[in-house]
Image 1 (cartoon, one colour):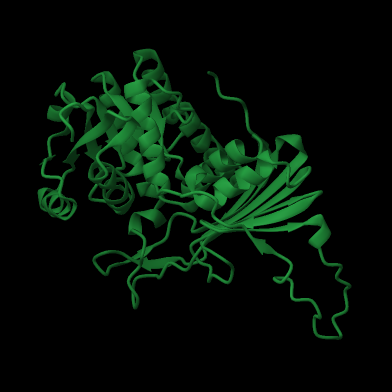
Image 2 (cartoon, rainbow, N blue to C red):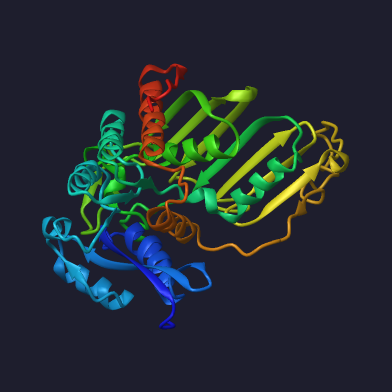
Length: 387
């Protein structure tokens, strides 16, 4: 760094980095690259530099993560760090059931807060930590990473340019086969499938679909959701068999404002035969698009084929031929890293940051109402949360 360059150092308490998401997406693919690139540049001679310390309950795991990441500072004493004025930001990627309590402690200690979603297991707790942060005057944000995926950003650009005309339908397919763990090791942690530990795909994924739909298309008005436990037995990290107590698939239909209908299938029991692990098809009067995590394909009205139903002959149309893949017209950074940079700018420069703990509470609200819809087998409206 040039001696004439101004550096804003932001001490970050990173809790939960021994877990899959905290370590891979937030530490190794976000904070470490930001440090290696010389910080978040805000002008020719000014940068924001995160100064992280890793925190958790297991010193052996923490030491291993520290060695892998090159972040030398770590601690098992969260309370001591919350009392340390050199750390102004608390980040949480711990188990969902622990998050609201951790965030409340951090807010009470005067820390700014950035955390993973779901922000809590109930709407009441999620909105409660929003109120605490709002009343304390600290800055707060929630991870809503899919908004910065290249595929979703390309959809947003098409909407802004009026490509679709009037949008009337959205179909999302998410998921992959998560092995049970007996013969082939499972690629997700066992707590995901235990209700008593905060698991379940409805709480996990409907939080995502809320912010994707609200921010990309239109606000969600109501939901009808059906959950299912398709694989009742799985094996944990110790090779022990356990009963699945949380749903591993969810089939949800959403009514949005502007007369848009959206349907998302979310499953950890599906074998993928589509363009990506997540695909979103958007249909409008003037054209359609299908977005994956990175790519996006479009079919305008003038390129739409005219099929005729006749099951007695081989299908004469190759339906993939009439779609055009959008080129990359800009560079795309890691989605988690992109939002981290925006939040660091929010803390230091007071730039706007729309994705706060109230937005996180809206995701929990949709998941909780989705579970109630499953229980009651009913369409349920989504009430507006207070400001």
